[in-house]
Length: 139
Image (cartoon, rainbow, N blue to C red; front, side, top):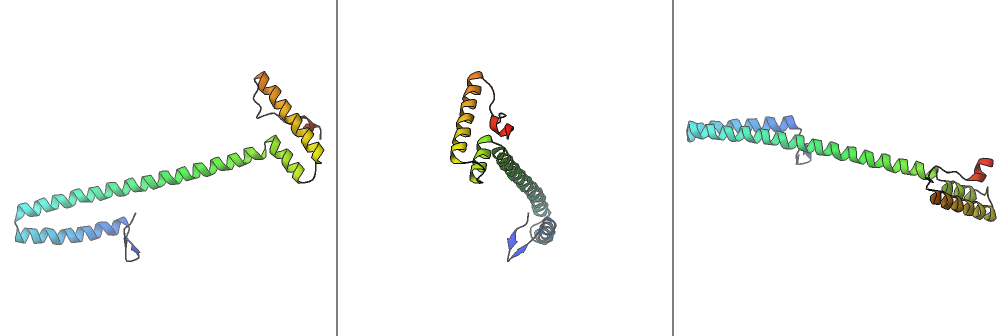
């Protein structure tokens, strides 16, 4: 993660280096102008802010990784749905009709047979996702 400034992206190491250089200047100025207790307090604030920046940066990186993993999972899900729909008997029947392998009468007869077989399977309590068209097996 880097902050954008004038079109330049700073990595985490550069941010910490800039922060420590500025912190040294401020701490030396506080030591000279306000005394050792103020310099010690400012040093403690810089240390705490450094750990806070480190923690927030790591948290953002983990969130980015989680979002990327989620996008990959969604992509794999949609790919498996496409594969599943391609193996669906109705889809295959429609593709055969669209390719001209079946006439309209053959398509409607096979579709009616598929619907009837699914209704019989549902009535018998069987899972219909694995069933094939009877006529497709014979072809």
